[in-house]
Length: 113
Length: 113
Image 1 (cartoon, one colour):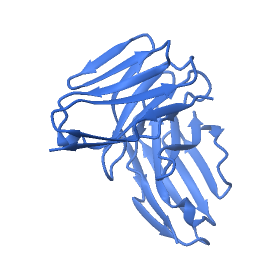
Image 2 (image 1 turned 30 degrees about the vertical axis):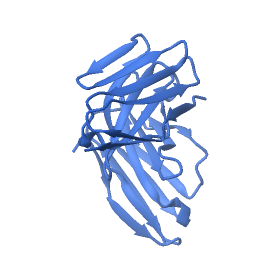
Image 3 (image 1 turned 120 degrees about the vertical axis):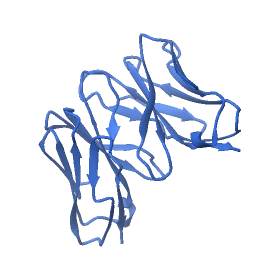
């Protein structure tokens, strides 16, 4: 493990379901991110949390709701998704002001049926 | 905001040949440029990065060059091997705010044995 753990690895859900994706980092980083990876837009930034405060939301539909209870944990709550939301959802963390790159989790492969 | 263009989208080379992937960025304030490698079914992993005060950086068979004036940077892989086959992403980060990375759309590199 690289220090960023995502669960579950795979998720199949119906359009009326509610589910949550979880991300946990053990690197002592202070910023966390959700990215959506699909064939059309390979690495699309969804949300940025810095010091547990959401600092950016790239016009993501409200059916995606992030939560960052502390600097080590990040959630993505899902409800009433659409088939086009099927994608790989990647979590990443970094240490702001340290001029370093991201460490990515392995992702959650989401299929909406 | 920052915009990163990456070319080519696909690249096929023979084992032992060199591969070059090019990226351009729009924000002259960007100061950090990482490259990520993503193998099939795996997470993106940082392979090399360069900061704006450096023109070139090398790590074994991988090198990155940066031209700040022209706002472009390139990844060079020499003596390619089949295990280099993957999708490569460039990124740029602008200081301040959330310090998020903006990614290019990726280049699928295939090294033929």
